Length: 124
Image (tube, rainbow, N blue to C red; front, side):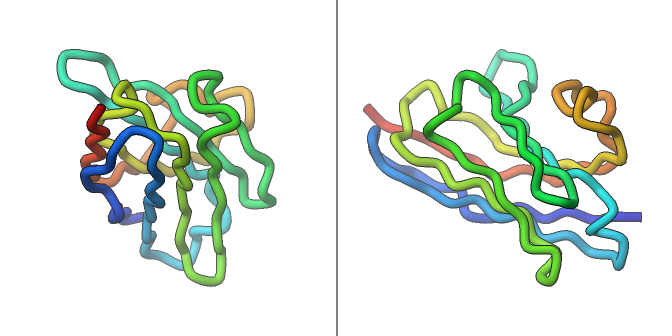
């Protein structure tokens, strides 16, 4: 069992930055790939980024060059650094854990555990 708790969301102006954190419980954190998803009102939850236990990463095209996922296995924490934020980045952001390989990271159905989410609002 893995429990995930996100933090770091908030209100920021366009062009600003935020860093989201996701703290995981359990001693098996390092065996999971970790992902970030987001869901805007009235829209489906979409993939943002993912990272393997060995720091291989994948970022969605919509955030590539602006967002960076990272993890600290010693702290059981995964991060999402978000720079150059745009109003269209406004959403609830969720972290999730999967034992799937690289080719499965984009599909939310492949994730076994989910956090409760943290809200990010970007004003224009």
